[in-house]
Image (tube, rainbow, N blue to C red):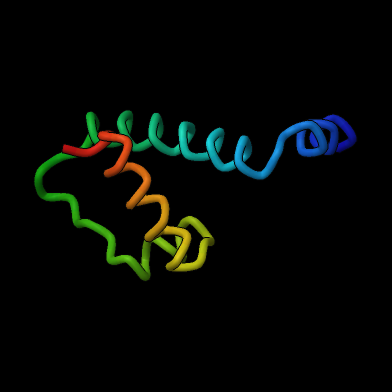
Length: 72
């Protein structure tokens, strides 16, 4: 537990957000390559519940990904 605390003490909020975003991006890419056309998409509310984030956070992440050219 102390080891995790050190990581958070060293990372700024922006660095932590970037690290989480990159991890999610890689997980999404890996998941999308394994997806089939008949899989259901999540609603924004379901995605927020799954990720345990506020809708404004999901909106900001979506906007940042579009602005950075990560989505076509």
